[in-house]
Length: 395
Image (cartoon, rainbow, N blue to C red; front, side, top):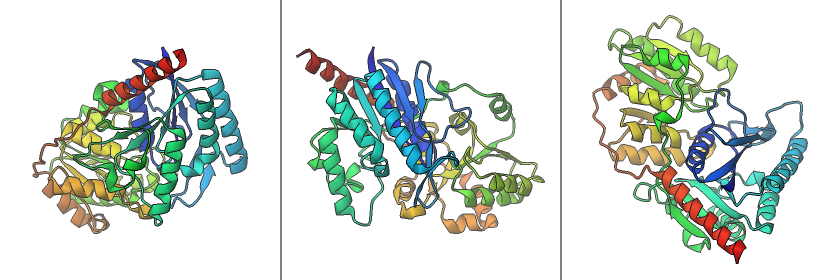
């Protein structure tokens, strides 16, 4: 089989990791895959059979995106960066991939140029094709013209293909990056990368929770490093809702939620018989299928789960670091009647939030009409590129 190395660096949430692993799941039919994880390891995270995972010394960021930090506090950032760079160069030399896929860079993660530029230099030197795996909306900068100029330079120097995991009918890349026409590589929309519920195995906790007979409201915030105001608001709303609706509230606070915040939530909700709080499940999509309402942030993967299941949804966008990605996504879906957008003022007052929840339960969402076949189409595009590699080498 042809070989593919996939580089993914998640620094705050888990969305990049989940989307990347779902793409890898589709690639395993045609490739021997080595997955490079540069972020914190998530306990119980499920990896497709046959995929080799290499966990680099993990790096994360603070919630304001001001600085990078080693997850292992005993190591300096300089030591971790040097170790990672050498580990990546050794890995590409021994694995010898036909294709290198890099998630997000250079549209983001440019602070990881210290290791990605040498990695791509090594890939190009041995004839490996390089692919950028990109979500639908990218972060804009204050100096957008300079930012886009750097992206074009790096894309045209190193990349053979850009795969945009979105549907231009919902969000064309031009909405957040104006110079698509200046890219010299192949550019393709793949459709959205959506998970399939049969891909993961239910845990004992999942089986117990999903077997409950009462109607369910699902609350989630992705990785858990942000979205605490939504979790706290829903704990308060749970008490209001206990005597008004028959539903129980299943909350996932995220694998990276700070210990103090998690136990504050548990303590605040200990007298609410209609509230169950856990950290993480690898099977969130199964809960989406079961739920009458999802209350969440509006990240890419959660949105895909909502579009896949058609569940009623209230969504709060993350706006830290002046990031407009989630706001753009949920505002457009709200305009189309697919989901309903929450504002900060809604979650700041738990009585108001309880009213929004109760009202949303009677809402009928419009069925989405977007391309959700991103996994298959990505695999086809990458496979085609790999055959180009074979032909070039043979010639």
